[in-house]
Image (tube, rainbow, N blue to C red):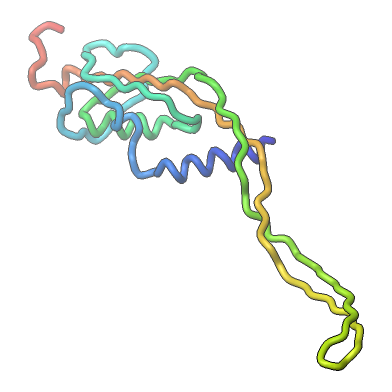
Length: 159
């Protein structure tokens, strides 16, 4: 079953496309110029302010790299993110399977003034669609993006 779960996840991942960043697709907040680095943090960093957030549901498999890329792109030098299990989607799908096909026949008949009988065999391939079960675990992801006062030109004189 775990192989089927992996195959289903891989199929969804490929269908969903891997060129977009889901944190950016669902980002809401300020956008500053891109910065060269960002750090994952577990809580609000000192001397920084919240500039935006992102929230979405997706299959498992999101890494720090995707959150960090989003943070750098919006100009946040810190990002706190995590995911909570949101449920499992189960279903039945069909995959094509090529199978060998054998045939044999016996015939006896009259036709065109002839009588006869014979035996014949044939061999070939056919495609059938085999059902399989799949399960995909979904997670609710949340991220908060922070910008340090050192990057912020509008920082207050006393944070």
